[in-house]
Amino acid sequence: MDSRLIALLERADRLAQRLEPLLPIEPPVIDWTTTLAARWQRQGRSGFLQPLRVSHDLRLDDLLGVDLQREQLARNTRQFVAGLPANHALLWGARGTGKSSLVRALLAEHWPAGLRLVEIERDHLADLPRVVELISDQPQRFVLFCDDLSFEAGEGEYRVLKSVLDGSLERAPDNVLLYATSNRRHLVPERQSDNDNWERVDGELHPSEAVEDKIALSDRFGLWLSFYPFTQEHYLSVVRHWIGSLAAQAGLSWAWDEELEKAAVRWATGRGNRNGRCAYQFARQWVGLRLLQ
View 1 (spheres, rainbow, N blue to C red):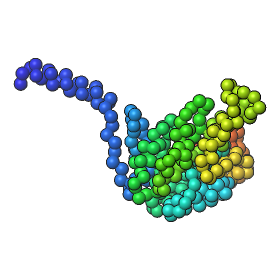
View 2 (view 1 turned 45 degrees about the horizontal axis):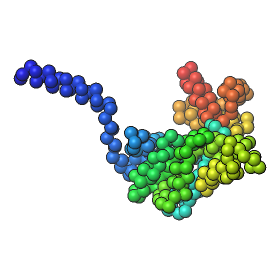
View 3 (view 1 turned 135 degrees about the horizontal axis):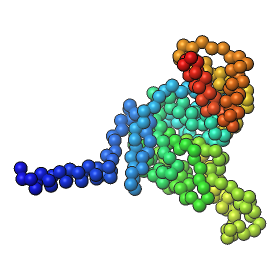
View 4 (view 1 turned 135 degrees about the vertical axis):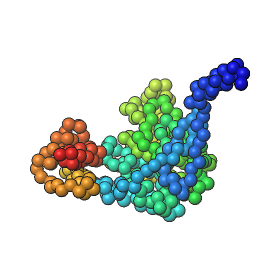
């Protein structure tokens, strides 16, 4: 072969290797009969659903101290899976109290009946209409899950969310619900000046209407569930639950005593909070050390 042709082919191969990372990823084909969850991946001006591998080890019984919230969301989800009317849900409140875990536990319980989960990040909410379009014709029931949902002043993505939930001419399909978690009840920051409706605020002639516009977003969620900080008693009960669960899996014998209780309290004090996440992390650390010894 001509040496010039060989050199040309080698240059073309090197160029192709450099360009390959810049080319769009071919969207995977999802079989929803075997895929339980997916995440929306932004790609250029569009995106695609990336299948996720999820475990079924988290049960609703693992979420302690949130019995009312658990039952309300479980009942709403059962209605949805059964093809009955159900509401979009907003889970708001203190961090680490089981909001996201509750959604994952519901997927683990109801996936045999056709429940599926699609995660979408807050920064990609403008793509919601595209995501809904991709799943609207599927026979399964889809929960769109947005974790840690909130908006800063001046951001416009919340208007897209309002339209998808309830405010556009094209209603969301019956096989789609939105479950969102947030540390804010109304999802957007509220200022004292918002309530000063007797004067002009930042050039706003009718500031009370601006408040209504902000609150209208959370009103689109028919089900509000509040999660509160743990008391010490609640925190310790969750610690005991997770130590018992992890120890049983590892075949480790253990007993709850004053020394263990003090260690759990010190752990929470060092972290600056008492919540379910903190309790689970302490249980993993304690059981892991015992197994190591």
